[in-house]
Image 1 (cartoon, rainbow over the protein chains, first blue to last red):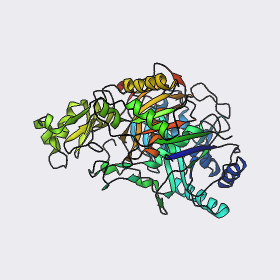
Image 2: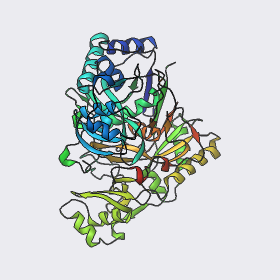
Image 3: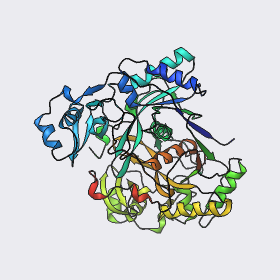
Image 4: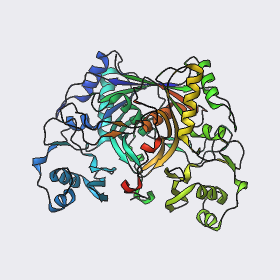
Length: 252
Length: 252
């Protein structure tokens, strides 16, 4: 049999609010659609639903725009209070130009607008911030699946990030539990017997990207199941392994 | 039925050399393993095999290292003639530090070492350069599949690129045929009736990433088939749509 990985969308998920049982809803929906959740699955859970159940939804009216936020936003379509939230979620501005803010978020991610956005959120003045600790969010879902179904899975919390040099965005991992986010070929031999010195693959990001293929921003499929991928189990996994140390990065 | 995308590796591919019929070999191998190639499939073909059949394999001994190449490489493990090839494949150096060269390649890609590498190539002094025109490579494979099997597919040529800010690399698209590399939600409404102003997803990169999950650098599975993904057909597709114009990029 050729190697095969299946990416299965989880349909029929409810609208979430602060305090809802996200893991329970994922399990219910997966069972209801007949796919279930099996040992070795990787659950890809998009950030938006995690933020909702963790109460990371804020209102524009909760803040007053600072002079900096007003100045940055001037001439652009965004509400300056939205910019204020971006500044509050950032710990360092990397670039700021043409209404775009690229920053290092307080969680350590490098992305546009501190990962904040307003789509797929009820209300006209609400924004979803990133979860405080997406690794912990992933661990919680993983534990709930283990407790209720008795199966061991990996969980990735994903978000849609833009990238330098390439148009459009792609989903990447912002939190992980149960698997090594990186597959390393260091020290292995390639098919011609050469040692592969440096190749490390960010499989967590590739899994997140694959999950987006069945998710879809409009269709309302916030969770997908990746079945058949042979990940490396890791109990103390953290997305920090994928965040490059500032001492090693050439684009700070 | 829940939405599902299958990622199927194509096994049993031969070792390729200049002039070999890559498309024919992909078709043969897909038929031999029983998966075949169906209308609507996306074939993900890794750059290395494309470069090999297109004769883009060069020798270190074909060039003499310039003083610049020698100076850049000093104190690092790479052969300075390898660096010379990187310089020859580049049209602009974006960053150059600690033995790493980030450049804009002559094709317009931004990546480390001009996309050149030495793994999975026979011989100890050979390097694979990127194809001259990966869109054309993808179109050729697409046409061959149409001619021989009578099915219309999309084809992506993929390569493994590093990224700023994130450790490890991930596969992205460097050539495309038959589908729009970007899925745009601009003007569509989200599940709460808000217009989504700016979200464009680089689905070609996500498909390339998904393809890597069954490929594997050591296993020797250079092609994968993505089945069940509902892409937007585009006859005159080009990866240029994903390469950000320098006027819009904040990290040149």
